[in-house]
Length: 432
Ligand code: NDP
Ligand code: HSE
Image 1: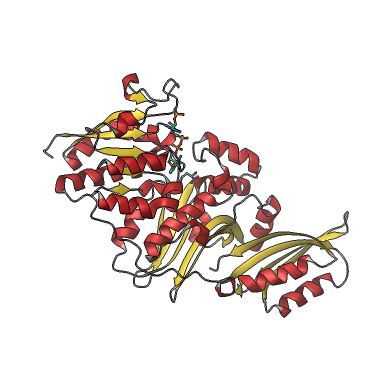
Image 2 (image 1 turned 90 degrees about the vertical axis):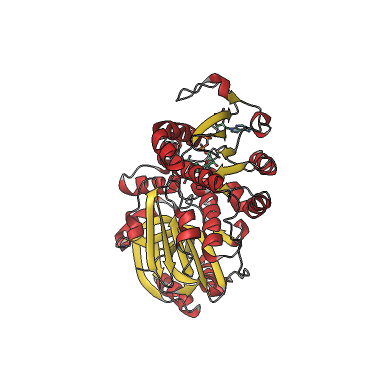
Protein backbone atom coordinates (compact mmCIF):
# COMPACT_ATOMS: atom_id res chain seq x y z
CA UNK A 1 0.00 0.00 0.00
CA UNK A 2 1.30 3.44 -0.76
CA UNK A 3 0.99 6.60 1.30
CA UNK A 4 -2.28 8.45 0.83
CA UNK A 5 -4.00 5.42 -0.69
CA UNK A 6 -7.61 4.77 0.30
CA UNK A 7 -8.55 1.95 2.64
CA UNK A 8 -12.14 1.08 1.79
CA UNK A 9 -14.48 0.09 4.59
CA UNK A 10 -17.76 -1.78 4.38
CA UNK A 11 -19.79 -0.72 7.41
CA UNK A 12 -22.44 -3.19 8.55
CA UNK A 13 -24.91 -1.40 10.82
CA UNK A 14 -25.70 2.28 11.29
CA UNK A 15 -27.34 2.27 14.72
CA UNK A 16 -25.79 3.64 17.91
CA UNK A 17 -22.26 2.35 17.28
CA UNK A 18 -22.28 2.60 13.47
CA UNK A 19 -23.33 6.24 13.69
CA UNK A 20 -20.51 6.88 16.17
CA UNK A 21 -18.02 5.28 13.76
CA UNK A 22 -19.13 7.53 10.90
CA UNK A 23 -18.97 10.62 13.12
CA UNK A 24 -15.52 9.76 14.45
CA UNK A 25 -14.04 8.96 11.03
CA UNK A 26 -15.26 12.37 9.85
CA UNK A 27 -14.30 14.36 12.95
CA UNK A 28 -10.82 12.84 13.32
CA UNK A 29 -10.01 12.43 9.64
CA UNK A 30 -6.81 14.45 9.78
CA UNK A 31 -5.46 12.64 12.88
CA UNK A 32 -6.26 9.24 11.39
CA UNK A 33 -4.57 10.19 8.14
CA UNK A 34 -1.52 11.41 10.06
CA UNK A 35 -1.30 8.19 12.07
CA UNK A 36 -1.86 5.69 9.29
CA UNK A 37 -0.75 7.59 6.22
CA UNK A 38 -3.94 6.27 4.59
CA UNK A 39 -7.41 7.63 3.93
CA UNK A 40 -10.11 5.63 5.67
CA UNK A 41 -13.19 5.75 3.48
CA UNK A 42 -16.60 4.22 4.05
CA UNK A 43 -17.47 2.69 0.70
CA UNK A 44 -20.83 1.09 1.55
CA UNK A 45 -23.17 0.80 4.55
CA UNK A 46 -25.38 -2.22 5.17
CA UNK A 47 -28.61 -1.49 7.09
CA UNK A 48 -31.93 -3.20 7.56
CA UNK A 49 -34.08 -0.22 6.62
CA UNK A 50 -32.32 1.96 4.00
CA UNK A 51 -35.24 4.43 3.95
CA UNK A 52 -35.09 5.12 7.70
CA UNK A 53 -34.38 8.68 8.86
CA UNK A 54 -30.86 8.89 10.37
CA UNK A 55 -29.39 11.18 12.99
CA UNK A 56 -26.44 11.94 10.66
CA UNK A 57 -26.28 12.64 6.97
CA UNK A 58 -24.93 9.84 4.79
CA UNK A 59 -25.10 10.00 1.01
CA UNK A 60 -28.12 7.78 0.12
CA UNK A 61 -26.16 5.84 -2.54
CA UNK A 62 -23.93 4.39 0.24
CA UNK A 63 -26.82 2.65 1.96
CA UNK A 64 -27.91 -0.84 0.99
CA UNK A 65 -29.88 -3.72 2.45
CA UNK A 66 -27.95 -6.24 0.37
CA UNK A 67 -24.90 -7.69 2.20
CA UNK A 68 -23.43 -8.99 -1.07
CA UNK A 69 -22.80 -5.41 -2.16
CA UNK A 70 -20.18 -5.25 0.59
CA UNK A 71 -19.01 -8.84 0.65
CA UNK A 72 -18.58 -9.22 -3.11
CA UNK A 73 -16.95 -5.83 -3.58
CA UNK A 74 -13.27 -6.60 -4.21
CA UNK A 75 -12.26 -3.02 -3.49
CA UNK A 76 -13.48 -3.24 0.15
CA UNK A 77 -10.56 -4.16 2.41
CA UNK A 78 -12.23 -4.13 5.85
CA UNK A 79 -15.69 -5.03 7.12
CA UNK A 80 -16.83 -3.27 10.30
CA UNK A 81 -19.68 -5.29 11.82
CA UNK A 82 -21.85 -3.31 14.25
CA UNK A 83 -25.20 -5.00 13.68
CA UNK A 84 -25.05 -7.33 16.68
CA UNK A 85 -26.51 -10.79 17.38
CA UNK A 86 -25.42 -14.20 16.13
CA UNK A 87 -27.10 -14.41 12.73
CA UNK A 88 -26.80 -13.15 10.07
CA UNK A 89 -23.57 -11.59 11.41
CA UNK A 90 -21.73 -14.90 11.81
CA UNK A 91 -22.42 -15.76 8.17
CA UNK A 92 -21.34 -12.29 7.01
CA UNK A 93 -18.10 -12.36 9.00
CA UNK A 94 -17.23 -15.87 7.85
CA UNK A 95 -17.84 -14.87 4.27
CA UNK A 96 -15.82 -11.67 4.63
CA UNK A 97 -12.83 -13.58 6.06
CA UNK A 98 -13.04 -16.23 3.34
CA UNK A 99 -12.90 -13.39 0.81
CA UNK A 100 -9.71 -12.13 2.49
CA UNK A 101 -11.31 -9.08 4.11
CA UNK A 102 -10.24 -7.96 7.56
CA UNK A 103 -13.00 -7.67 10.15
CA UNK A 104 -13.59 -5.34 13.08
CA UNK A 105 -16.57 -6.13 15.27
CA UNK A 106 -18.20 -4.93 18.50
CA UNK A 107 -20.18 -8.14 18.81
CA UNK A 108 -19.55 -9.91 22.13
CA UNK A 109 -22.47 -12.30 21.63
CA UNK A 110 -20.75 -13.67 18.55
CA UNK A 111 -17.18 -13.53 19.89
CA UNK A 112 -18.11 -15.27 23.16
CA UNK A 113 -19.83 -18.09 21.29
CA UNK A 114 -17.90 -18.45 18.02
CA UNK A 115 -14.79 -16.34 18.63
CA UNK A 116 -12.40 -19.32 18.67
CA UNK A 117 -13.48 -20.65 15.28
CA UNK A 118 -13.71 -17.20 13.67
CA UNK A 119 -10.22 -16.29 14.93
CA UNK A 120 -8.89 -19.58 13.55
CA UNK A 121 -10.43 -18.84 10.17
CA UNK A 122 -9.00 -15.31 10.24
CA UNK A 123 -5.50 -16.66 10.97
CA UNK A 124 -5.81 -19.19 8.12
CA UNK A 125 -6.73 -16.39 5.74
CA UNK A 126 -4.03 -13.98 7.02
CA UNK A 127 -6.79 -11.62 8.05
CA UNK A 128 -7.20 -9.52 11.17
CA UNK A 129 -10.30 -10.05 13.30
CA UNK A 130 -10.34 -7.41 16.03
CA UNK A 131 -13.05 -6.95 18.66
CA UNK A 132 -11.88 -4.32 21.16
CA UNK A 133 -15.34 -2.70 21.39
CA UNK A 134 -16.99 -5.96 22.39
CA UNK A 135 -15.92 -5.60 26.04
CA UNK A 136 -16.34 -2.47 28.15
CA UNK A 137 -17.04 -0.08 25.25
CA UNK A 138 -14.44 2.67 25.29
CA UNK A 139 -11.99 1.00 27.71
CA UNK A 140 -9.10 -0.51 25.73
CA UNK A 141 -9.03 -3.67 27.84
CA UNK A 142 -8.67 -6.37 25.19
CA UNK A 143 -5.47 -5.02 23.65
CA UNK A 144 -4.20 -4.35 27.18
CA UNK A 145 -4.71 -8.00 28.18
CA UNK A 146 -3.33 -9.36 24.93
CA UNK A 147 -0.31 -7.08 24.61
CA UNK A 148 0.51 -5.28 27.84
CA UNK A 149 0.19 -8.17 30.31
CA UNK A 150 2.22 -10.70 28.30
CA UNK A 151 5.05 -10.70 30.87
CA UNK A 152 2.74 -11.46 33.78
CA UNK A 153 0.50 -14.26 35.04
CA UNK A 154 -3.00 -12.92 35.61
CA UNK A 155 -4.89 -14.57 38.44
CA UNK A 156 -7.93 -12.35 38.86
CA UNK A 157 -10.16 -10.17 36.68
CA UNK A 158 -13.15 -8.37 38.16
CA UNK A 159 -15.35 -6.07 36.24
CA UNK A 160 -18.39 -3.89 36.03
CA UNK A 161 -18.74 -4.63 32.35
CA UNK A 162 -22.34 -3.82 31.55
CA UNK A 163 -23.27 -0.16 31.21
CA UNK A 164 -27.04 -0.69 31.22
CA UNK A 165 -27.22 -2.55 34.53
CA UNK A 166 -24.70 -0.23 36.15
CA UNK A 167 -26.81 2.71 35.01
CA UNK A 168 -29.97 1.09 36.43
CA UNK A 169 -28.41 0.17 39.78
CA UNK A 170 -26.76 3.61 40.11
CA UNK A 171 -30.02 5.45 39.40
CA UNK A 172 -31.97 3.22 41.82
CA UNK A 173 -29.32 3.76 44.51
CA UNK A 174 -28.47 7.42 44.04
CA UNK A 175 -31.77 8.90 42.82
CA UNK A 176 -34.25 6.37 44.15
CA UNK A 177 -35.94 5.94 40.75
CA UNK A 178 -37.65 2.66 39.85
CA UNK A 179 -36.04 -0.21 37.95
CA UNK A 180 -38.45 0.27 35.01
CA UNK A 181 -37.80 4.01 34.76
CA UNK A 182 -34.02 3.51 34.86
CA UNK A 183 -34.18 0.77 32.21
CA UNK A 184 -36.16 2.93 29.80
CA UNK A 185 -33.63 5.76 30.30
CA UNK A 186 -30.77 3.32 29.52
CA UNK A 187 -32.60 2.26 26.35
CA UNK A 188 -33.15 5.87 25.26
CA UNK A 189 -29.47 6.64 25.81
CA UNK A 190 -28.45 3.78 23.47
CA UNK A 191 -26.73 1.70 26.18
CA UNK A 192 -29.08 -1.30 26.17
CA UNK A 193 -28.96 -4.14 23.67
CA UNK A 194 -31.74 -4.43 21.07
CA UNK A 195 -33.20 -6.99 23.49
CA UNK A 196 -32.29 -5.67 26.96
CA UNK A 197 -32.98 -9.11 28.49
CA UNK A 198 -29.33 -9.88 27.76
CA UNK A 199 -28.29 -6.87 29.83
CA UNK A 200 -30.57 -7.27 32.84
CA UNK A 201 -30.29 -11.06 33.08
CA UNK A 202 -26.49 -10.80 33.10
CA UNK A 203 -25.79 -12.57 29.78
CA UNK A 204 -24.13 -9.55 28.17
CA UNK A 205 -21.75 -9.28 31.13
CA UNK A 206 -21.23 -13.06 31.13
CA UNK A 207 -20.17 -13.00 27.47
CA UNK A 208 -17.74 -10.19 28.19
CA UNK A 209 -16.31 -12.03 31.21
CA UNK A 210 -15.88 -15.18 29.08
CA UNK A 211 -13.88 -13.12 26.57
CA UNK A 212 -11.76 -11.46 29.29
CA UNK A 213 -11.09 -14.71 31.15
CA UNK A 214 -10.09 -16.48 27.92
CA UNK A 215 -7.61 -13.74 27.05
CA UNK A 216 -6.34 -13.16 30.58
CA UNK A 217 -5.93 -16.77 31.71
CA UNK A 218 -5.19 -18.38 28.29
CA UNK A 219 -7.99 -20.87 28.96
CA UNK A 220 -10.86 -21.32 26.50
CA UNK A 221 -13.85 -20.17 28.58
CA UNK A 222 -17.32 -20.61 27.12
CA UNK A 223 -20.56 -18.98 28.12
CA UNK A 224 -21.72 -22.25 29.76
CA UNK A 225 -18.71 -22.02 32.10
CA UNK A 226 -19.96 -18.75 33.56
CA UNK A 227 -22.39 -18.81 36.52
CA UNK A 228 -24.84 -16.04 35.66
CA UNK A 229 -27.36 -14.08 37.67
CA UNK A 230 -28.72 -10.72 36.54
CA UNK A 231 -30.22 -7.79 38.41
CA UNK A 232 -33.92 -8.57 38.04
CA UNK A 233 -34.01 -9.95 41.61
CA UNK A 234 -32.32 -6.94 43.17
CA UNK A 235 -35.00 -5.12 45.13
CA UNK A 236 -34.88 -1.55 46.41
CA UNK A 237 -35.00 -3.09 49.89
CA UNK A 238 -31.69 -4.90 49.25
CA UNK A 239 -30.14 -1.67 48.00
CA UNK A 240 -31.26 0.13 51.19
CA UNK A 241 -30.12 -2.66 53.54
CA UNK A 242 -26.79 -2.92 51.74
CA UNK A 243 -26.38 0.84 52.15
CA UNK A 244 -27.04 0.57 55.89
CA UNK A 245 -24.42 -2.18 56.15
CA UNK A 246 -21.84 -0.07 54.28
CA UNK A 247 -22.10 -1.48 50.75
CA UNK A 248 -23.39 -0.64 47.27
CA UNK A 249 -24.82 -3.33 45.00
CA UNK A 250 -23.12 -3.78 41.61
CA UNK A 251 -23.46 -6.41 38.90
CA UNK A 252 -19.94 -7.75 39.15
CA UNK A 253 -18.12 -10.18 36.91
CA UNK A 254 -15.48 -12.17 38.78
CA UNK A 255 -12.92 -14.45 37.13
CA UNK A 256 -10.25 -16.18 39.21
CA UNK A 257 -7.60 -18.74 38.42
CA UNK A 258 -5.67 -20.47 41.16
CA UNK A 259 -3.72 -23.70 40.96
CA UNK A 260 -4.99 -24.47 37.45
CA UNK A 261 -8.62 -24.09 38.56
CA UNK A 262 -10.82 -21.37 37.06
CA UNK A 263 -14.01 -19.73 38.27
CA UNK A 264 -16.03 -17.20 36.30
CA UNK A 265 -19.29 -15.66 37.49
CA UNK A 266 -21.54 -12.68 37.07
CA UNK A 267 -23.84 -11.80 39.91
CA UNK A 268 -25.15 -8.93 42.02
CA UNK A 269 -22.44 -8.19 44.55
CA UNK A 270 -22.26 -6.07 47.68
CA UNK A 271 -19.20 -3.90 47.20
CA UNK A 272 -17.82 -2.08 50.27
CA UNK A 273 -18.26 1.67 49.85
CA UNK A 274 -14.51 2.10 50.37
CA UNK A 275 -13.67 -0.17 47.39
CA UNK A 276 -12.73 1.64 44.12
CA UNK A 277 -15.40 -0.34 42.23
CA UNK A 278 -18.12 1.16 44.47
CA UNK A 279 -17.73 4.58 42.92
CA UNK A 280 -18.12 3.34 39.33
CA UNK A 281 -21.52 4.79 38.50
CA UNK A 282 -23.86 5.50 35.62
CA UNK A 283 -22.87 3.82 32.32
CA UNK A 284 -19.22 3.74 33.37
CA UNK A 285 -17.41 0.40 33.41
CA UNK A 286 -14.29 -0.66 35.27
CA UNK A 287 -12.07 -3.69 34.95
CA UNK A 288 -9.74 -4.69 37.77
CA UNK A 289 -6.87 -6.99 36.80
CA UNK A 290 -4.52 -8.66 39.27
CA UNK A 291 -1.22 -9.95 37.94
CA UNK A 292 1.22 -11.94 40.08
CA UNK A 293 4.07 -9.58 39.22
CA UNK A 294 2.32 -6.26 38.64
CA UNK A 295 -0.19 -6.57 41.49
CA UNK A 296 -3.42 -4.56 41.27
CA UNK A 297 -4.37 -2.54 38.20
CA UNK A 298 -7.67 -0.94 37.25
CA UNK A 299 -9.12 0.40 33.99
CA UNK A 300 -12.05 2.79 33.97
CA UNK A 301 -14.18 4.51 31.34
CA UNK A 302 -17.48 4.68 29.47
CA UNK A 303 -18.70 1.16 28.87
CA UNK A 304 -21.38 1.93 26.34
CA UNK A 305 -22.74 4.65 24.07
CA UNK A 306 -22.11 6.01 20.61
CA UNK A 307 -18.74 7.77 20.67
CA UNK A 308 -16.95 5.86 23.46
CA UNK A 309 -17.67 2.57 21.68
CA UNK A 310 -16.75 4.05 18.30
CA UNK A 311 -13.28 4.95 19.61
CA UNK A 312 -12.59 1.25 20.20
CA UNK A 313 -13.91 0.29 16.75
CA UNK A 314 -11.87 2.97 14.98
CA UNK A 315 -8.74 2.07 16.99
CA UNK A 316 -9.14 -1.49 15.67
CA UNK A 317 -9.45 -0.09 12.16
CA UNK A 318 -6.21 1.82 12.63
CA UNK A 319 -4.53 -1.40 13.85
CA UNK A 320 -5.74 -3.23 10.72
CA UNK A 321 -4.41 -0.48 8.46
CA UNK A 322 -1.03 -0.42 10.20
CA UNK A 323 -0.81 -4.21 9.77
CA UNK A 324 -1.77 -3.86 6.11
CA UNK A 325 1.11 -1.47 5.57
CA UNK A 326 3.52 -3.91 7.21
CA UNK A 327 1.94 -6.95 5.54
CA UNK A 328 1.45 -8.73 8.88
CA UNK A 329 -2.35 -9.11 9.09
CA UNK A 330 -3.57 -12.22 10.91
CA UNK A 331 -0.23 -12.89 12.62
CA UNK A 332 -0.95 -11.54 16.12
CA UNK A 333 -3.12 -14.26 17.52
CA UNK A 334 -2.33 -16.33 20.60
CA UNK A 335 -4.75 -19.19 21.15
CA UNK A 336 -5.57 -20.54 24.67
CA UNK A 337 -2.78 -22.89 25.75
CA UNK A 338 -3.91 -23.96 29.26
CA UNK A 339 -6.31 -26.83 29.83
CA UNK A 340 -9.69 -25.78 31.19
CA UNK A 341 -10.60 -27.03 34.66
CA UNK A 342 -13.48 -25.17 36.27
CA UNK A 343 -13.96 -25.03 40.06
CA UNK A 344 -16.79 -27.03 41.61
CA UNK A 345 -19.23 -25.35 44.03
CA UNK A 346 -17.31 -26.65 47.06
CA UNK A 347 -14.13 -24.99 45.73
CA UNK A 348 -15.67 -21.54 45.29
CA UNK A 349 -15.19 -19.50 48.46
CA UNK A 350 -16.47 -16.01 49.02
CA UNK A 351 -18.61 -13.98 51.43
CA UNK A 352 -22.39 -13.95 50.97
CA UNK A 353 -25.39 -11.73 51.75
CA UNK A 354 -28.88 -13.17 52.07
CA UNK A 355 -32.28 -11.96 53.24
CA UNK A 356 -35.35 -13.75 54.54
CA UNK A 357 -38.83 -12.69 55.63
CA UNK A 358 -39.76 -14.73 58.73
CA UNK A 359 -42.52 -14.95 61.32
CA UNK A 360 -41.52 -12.61 64.12
CA UNK A 361 -41.55 -15.11 66.99
CA UNK A 362 -39.19 -16.40 69.63
CA UNK A 363 -36.48 -18.83 68.56
CA UNK A 364 -36.55 -18.21 64.78
CA UNK A 365 -33.24 -16.36 64.67
CA UNK A 366 -31.66 -19.04 66.87
CA UNK A 367 -32.85 -21.78 64.47
CA UNK A 368 -31.38 -19.93 61.48
CA UNK A 369 -28.02 -19.34 63.13
CA UNK A 370 -27.99 -22.98 64.23
CA UNK A 371 -28.50 -24.19 60.65
CA UNK A 372 -25.71 -21.91 59.47
CA UNK A 373 -23.44 -23.18 62.21
CA UNK A 374 -24.19 -26.82 61.27
CA UNK A 375 -23.19 -26.00 57.68
CA UNK A 376 -20.04 -24.36 59.08
CA UNK A 377 -21.08 -20.97 57.72
CA UNK A 378 -19.80 -18.25 60.01
CA UNK A 379 -21.77 -14.99 60.36
CA UNK A 380 -19.97 -11.65 59.93
CA UNK A 381 -22.96 -9.26 60.19
CA UNK A 382 -26.59 -9.84 61.08
CA UNK A 383 -29.58 -7.51 61.30
CA UNK A 384 -33.28 -7.94 62.01
CA UNK A 385 -36.03 -5.46 61.09
CA UNK A 386 -39.43 -6.24 62.64
CA UNK A 387 -42.69 -5.16 61.01
CA UNK A 388 -45.35 -4.55 63.70
CA UNK A 389 -48.25 -4.63 61.23
CA UNK A 390 -47.52 -8.00 59.63
CA UNK A 391 -45.93 -9.64 62.69
CA UNK A 392 -43.06 -10.52 60.38
CA UNK A 393 -39.39 -9.62 60.41
CA UNK A 394 -36.72 -9.22 57.78
CA UNK A 395 -33.46 -10.96 58.62
CA UNK A 396 -30.33 -10.20 56.69
CA UNK A 397 -27.02 -11.90 57.09
CA UNK A 398 -23.52 -11.32 55.75
CA UNK A 399 -21.24 -14.33 56.13
CA UNK A 400 -17.52 -14.76 56.49
CA UNK A 401 -15.80 -16.79 53.77
CA UNK A 402 -17.77 -19.93 53.01
CA UNK A 403 -18.11 -22.23 50.04
CA UNK A 404 -20.97 -21.77 47.60
CA UNK A 405 -21.98 -25.36 48.33
CA UNK A 406 -22.15 -24.85 52.11
CA UNK A 407 -24.19 -21.67 51.73
CA UNK A 408 -26.60 -23.13 49.17
CA UNK A 409 -27.21 -26.14 51.45
CA UNK A 410 -27.86 -23.92 54.48
CA UNK A 411 -30.20 -21.63 52.54
CA UNK A 412 -32.18 -24.56 51.25
CA UNK A 413 -32.66 -25.85 54.81
CA UNK A 414 -33.56 -22.38 56.13
CA UNK A 415 -35.99 -21.86 53.22
CA UNK A 416 -37.74 -25.09 54.27
CA UNK A 417 -38.41 -23.86 57.83
CA UNK A 418 -42.08 -23.42 58.61
CA UNK A 419 -41.40 -19.94 60.05
CA UNK A 420 -39.66 -18.68 56.91
CA UNK A 421 -42.09 -16.89 54.58
CA UNK A 422 -39.69 -16.02 51.79
CA UNK A 423 -36.00 -16.30 50.88
CA UNK A 424 -35.39 -13.11 48.87
CA UNK A 425 -31.83 -12.75 47.76
CA UNK A 426 -28.44 -14.41 47.80
CA UNK A 427 -25.63 -12.16 46.62
CA UNK A 428 -21.84 -12.22 46.75
CA UNK A 429 -20.02 -9.83 49.09
CA UNK A 430 -16.70 -8.44 47.98
CA UNK A 431 -14.00 -8.22 50.62
CA UNK A 432 -12.19 -4.92 51.06
P1 NDP B 1 -28.38 -0.79 17.07
O1 NDP B 1 -29.58 -1.65 17.30
O2 NDP B 1 -28.43 0.63 17.49
O3 NDP B 1 -28.02 -0.81 15.50
C1 NDP B 1 -28.04 -1.97 14.73
C2 NDP B 1 -27.83 -1.62 13.26
O4 NDP B 1 -27.77 -2.80 12.51
C3 NDP B 1 -28.94 -0.77 12.64
O5 NDP B 1 -28.39 0.20 11.78
C4 NDP B 1 -29.77 -1.77 11.84
O6 NDP B 1 -30.34 -1.23 10.64
C5 NDP B 1 -28.72 -2.78 11.44
N1 NDP B 1 -29.26 -4.11 11.28
C6 NDP B 1 -29.96 -4.83 12.19
N2 NDP B 1 -30.25 -6.05 11.68
C7 NDP B 1 -29.75 -6.09 10.43
C8 NDP B 1 -29.73 -7.05 9.40
N3 NDP B 1 -30.31 -8.23 9.54
N4 NDP B 1 -29.11 -6.73 8.23
C9 NDP B 1 -28.54 -5.53 8.06
N5 NDP B 1 -28.50 -4.57 9.01
C10 NDP B 1 -29.11 -4.86 10.17
O7 NDP B 1 -27.15 -1.54 17.73
P2 NDP B 1 -25.88 -0.91 18.46
O8 NDP B 1 -25.22 0.05 17.55
O9 NDP B 1 -26.24 -0.47 19.82
O10 NDP B 1 -24.96 -2.21 18.66
C11 NDP B 1 -24.25 -2.78 17.60
C12 NDP B 1 -23.26 -3.81 18.13
O11 NDP B 1 -22.33 -3.15 19.00
C13 NDP B 1 -23.87 -4.92 18.99
O12 NDP B 1 -23.13 -6.09 18.79
C14 NDP B 1 -23.69 -4.42 20.40
O13 NDP B 1 -23.67 -5.46 21.35
C15 NDP B 1 -22.34 -3.77 20.27
N6 NDP B 1 -22.05 -2.76 21.27
C16 NDP B 1 -22.94 -1.77 21.51
C17 NDP B 1 -22.66 -0.78 22.42
C18 NDP B 1 -23.61 0.33 22.70
O14 NDP B 1 -23.32 1.16 23.56
N7 NDP B 1 -24.74 0.42 22.02
C19 NDP B 1 -21.39 -0.78 23.15
C20 NDP B 1 -20.48 -1.87 22.82
C21 NDP B 1 -20.82 -2.82 21.90
P3 NDP B 1 -31.46 -0.08 10.64
O15 NDP B 1 -30.77 1.13 11.21
O16 NDP B 1 -31.80 0.10 9.23
O17 NDP B 1 -32.59 -0.57 11.49
N1 HSE C 1 -25.57 -3.21 26.27
C1 HSE C 1 -24.18 -3.09 26.55
C2 HSE C 1 -24.00 -2.46 27.92
C3 HSE C 1 -23.50 -2.26 25.50
O1 HSE C 1 -24.98 -1.92 28.45
O2 HSE C 1 -22.91 -2.53 28.46
C4 HSE C 1 -22.00 -2.24 25.65
O3 HSE C 1 -21.44 -3.49 25.37
